[in-house]
Amino acid sequence: MSKKSMAVYPGSYDPLTNGHIDIIQRGLKIFDKIIVAVLKNPAKTYLFDLDERVRMLRAVFKEQDKIEIDHFEGLLVDYVKRRNITTIVRGLRAISDFEIEFQMALMNRKIEPRIETIFFVPSESYSFLSSKLVKEVYMLGGEVRSMVPLLVDRKLKKKFRRG
Ligand code: PNS
Image (cartoon, rainbow, N blue to C red; front, side, top):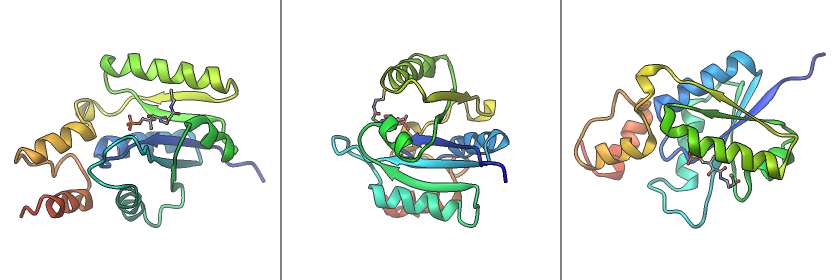
């Protein structure tokens, strides 16, 4: 039996957006399985805590056995090594992403040369989309329904007691 190819798609997912989903779907064209790894950074304040972020992802991707939801703390490369995986997936939306993604990929390679980072370019309709902007638009009274899964929209409504 051939060995399954797997990659880790790390992120904050605060919250999950349709842009993330687009990247996961593209990743699954190349890999048999994508592990969506949610970061818990104790130094950072999140809108949704780790448990909420993980639950949302698990609900959105339930019954999709090619997508696993996990979480990690500390160095990404340590987590990837622990999982016995050698590929990290990230999305590149625009040139503005490039510098930071380039730095992270090179730093991760410096720490662990066996791990490669592969970038996927999302649909141009998501090139403007980020969790940060989704939160900002929502907090300021805008609608984000077309940018996030229904469940995330509902959780945002609940969080801000709207609707
Ligand atoms: O969704 P984000 O916030 O753009 O994801 C950033 C993430 C989680 C990929 C990055 O912050 C990360 O890998 N953090 C873990 C800590 C780490 O390994 N730092 C060194 C990487 S250069």
